[in-house]
Image (tube, rainbow, N blue to C red):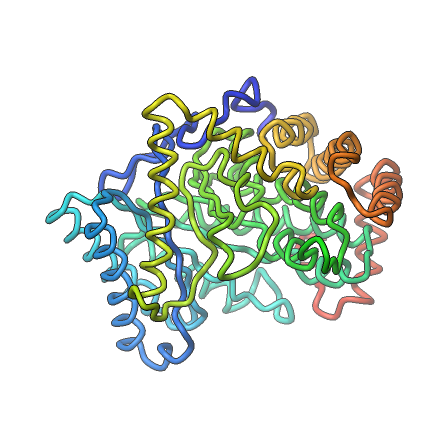
Length: 451
């Protein structure tokens, strides 16, 4: 387990630079002084009717991306193909898409010199009702990972869902015990189990990273905006800090980055591991709103969007239009590096969001550094999660006036602090929570988590 940080001070951490840069694909260097656009996409329903139809549409999508790149004069890009379920349940489909995409990237490298990489994000289609560890759906997921690697994917990612069954039940009920149980016990155990398998079968592909989409991003979306608060924003921020522990687990099992963009907790991950990360922010607006549109770019090595459906705009394919916005964002960051103004730009990105919301506050590099330090100071996943929660609460408390939180949120924060400062020890929580949620959550199975 990581026991120290990759960086000595928060001001060392900057977009475009990582302690452990990566080189892959067609001469793509990540974390070595450049910020690279990473575009991700999903097809509209209907193309899954046949393999031929699906593959052809992904080819068209890839061509649209690469044509936009060369037409605008940019020279590096990463694609993230997020698998739809039929690409996992049908053994050859996902690999066929990856193979065709890689051939197109090769063509544009040969003809135009475009440096590129391809991430395959395999869908976690495991069924809670059938069990996460010993079922055909797990075999399908791992087969899709192996096929993607064999057909030329440069990076392998997944948005694993372990712990989601208890987390979802608990989040909407403000059940802090269930939230702690899912993030401190269930999710890390599942991530470790899954990523031991992924790294074992990754072949030449780089096992890149996992995300807490099913957990922390669910809280972020439910928290919503400053008017429509469906859950406390303080809770969503604390959950984000806690979720870094389960995402960190994949790196302790062999993942090497770049971390996938929708893991907003990647800021904390980069500080601990030194691995490059992809991030998303304002360019996620077509998929969901958030309060961290600029600050999330402060330490990114790739800059991405949340998944956009492939469709048509006046200017062409939606995915090409999104890519263009990403390219200009990254062009600005690269120019700031080249001109010696990168720290000034970084500070503007941070300051423009930092006090907008607690969720932005905990992603500020100085505060993420504190959370990261709290995490590595603990010895177990459970203790790490509790430490991350308490440190994030302290951070929010220190800035309570600048955050201008509603009175109800301030009172709520006090009760959450009391809970985590008096959290039960791990054995007691496992014993009590295992019995409680076995009775209350229909698809929770202790065997999925070695309980």
